[in-house]
Length: 427
Image (cartoon, rainbow, N blue to C red):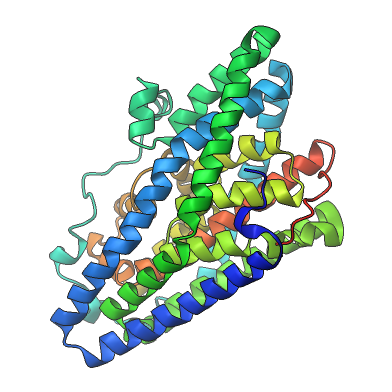
């Protein structure tokens, strides 16, 4: 795909208007359903709407593994020597490490400053054990051998079938590096992969036509099920978390300005559709194909965008990391447990490591929180406190993951020589 697709000219503005309309209609339908229908009927409606959302997400997941393999392998093959690949990877990982540290620090600082859990009467809000039945209580932070075994695929077919993006990335790096070393001998293979990538982008274009419907269904279903009351009960927690995300987004804007001035700030308008999609569906995955297209259209060289984004989806989940720190301190405060500075430092280090081994794990942030509660001897039942609004907060952290990886791509592109001339299409 040439990067224009849905994002070209006036059609982009029409598409954005449709996204906005679907968002408002979803909120309205969900509010009416929750207010006027009995709980059983609201739950049933949410279940039917979930069919639409789940179907859209399955279509997106169908695309991701072959798209990552084709685009990353061809990008690496066109990149040059193994030294070039290593240099690019090192720059990306250094940015990811810095962004991870900043995200964790903001979460710790804001939770300490705002004290979102102090006013919450924990003993009256604990849910029954059934409320946390969806969490794997046996989950444990991966050991080094387990992490290595998880990173290295036993079979690329198995990795693609399970959408293990980190394993697909590892295999793609090997294939791309080998193809780069063979040069002309692997020329046809690289061209074939580029053609496959183009086909997958065209399929993405088709699937994205359903995005407004998926956003409508996702929002209507969530509000129909939970209503607006849950926001009022957790206003300090939810508001504090979104304020913390706002601080992180402000730092992203500062970083963009430092990287490329007003030109780089234009990225915000370019990626608004992927961000809205991730927010509404609570899925960073859903926005990956469109984000890759928009970055290339913005001026990030395709070889860099196709290299950095898959790594970012495994190592640069800024929103999720901030959520883990904020939620854990919220639970501690709700139970009137004060974590000493040394314990907060230990929390920082634990999350910095454990969040890097959870790519592709469903509800990974909840799993990390469950492990960390046990590590700091906090009540396991505290997990129910954050589960009550987890979906609402997942929307914000998914959108933040998209913004963080977009900024990372611009940063690496700038360090590698600057952005290309942007596409003539308008965002």
